[in-house]
Image (cartoon, rainbow, N blue to C red; front, side, top):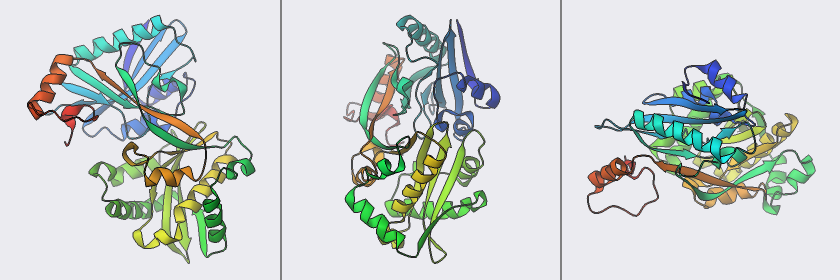
Length: 342
């Protein structure tokens, strides 16, 4: 039995472990996790016993003005990774014990992770290692289907709009990596339009490292109308997965519906690359609203998005919640609750 905690600075060691598991996406790579190490420590928990292997990427954060820490996951879909479809309960329980001992020794009082909807092992946590909660459905396109069967799942209105776009002056192209600042400008304008949370305003350094990463491939697709960029989408490719990571359309160009053509082009690229999934994700903040309805027009395929929550030190956790809210603890599903509105 062997248990280790590998920092994201050990890029090759981290990636060597990922090559041992059945499947992983860019959200579990060392390079992507390393993008979030400003105030956090990015680590990969790795456990092996006999022929079984379990890995879990997390960000370890200090809790301000306390000696304690908590753990969370990167933006996107992380979760548990294994090298076999079936892991015996005894093995999983030993993984839990090792992780619990590490958390206790390092004053980590709780952990949270968004789980990957298309990796079956993602939510396969041991009993007594917290709980998983269903949030909502996400949308994906099955790229293993013939192209005509992929587009057969498009809604009638989407097919009409794509046909209209094909007869317009709008063109689509894959951008050069050096054009990433054009995407950033469009993206920030879009976040302003949506009055988005500060968490969605990723830094320029984040985008630069994302675009030039080597553990996975990043693609920027631009929509142009007479050489004016009217929309853009940022996609990533890793193993069998293509992810629609971020999109950007300024207010004045919304009537052109450029994202529809951008996603359709990404689907074609993913098919040509012989990928299995184009994952479009779910709604804003996990809600089945307008964004989810927009994505649903591209496919009838759905996956379940879940999160994992584990309170390791119940006394300290509840003490911190009470210190923040007193006797007026809100009924809110946010986790950890003491970070609500931080």
